Image: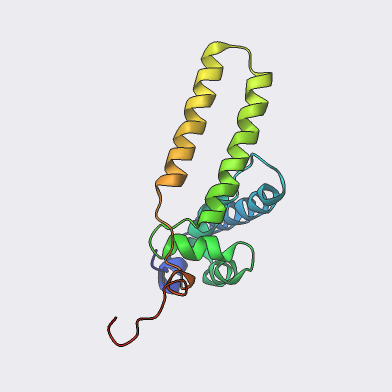
Amino acid sequence: MPPINRTEIRRSSSHLRWGWLLLAWACIVLALIGALVPGLPTTVFVLIAGWAASRCSPRLHQWLRSHSLLGPCLRNWEQGGHIDRRTKWTASAGMLFALILILFSVQHPLWLSACLALIAIGALAVWSRPEPATVSANRHKKPRRNGV
């Protein structure tokens, strides 16, 4: 996602800019809560926060990109829509926890079917995304000697 330059931000209305900023900070808070609470997504909120911040505050967007917890997810997404394997497994564990809660708490078949379908779509979306290339993948290969 290419950053929006400052002149474009200045041209947008002040109210709209404050709306983007409010959305960005609300998503940052939800992402941090999601890092602690199973079932609440973190990645989605980080991506929305980065998108909103890029529309209103280059400084906030850069802070998000360089953040030790939130930054890797945002940078991976901006560099090709990548989701790393650890995030995929964490998201899957959260979805499994949510699924267990839903199975024990939702009695109506229609609501249960809708919840299960949404969890399945979420899992498919997460696991269908490519993973970022890693440098360590080349370390496990044995070096070739004299073309052998």
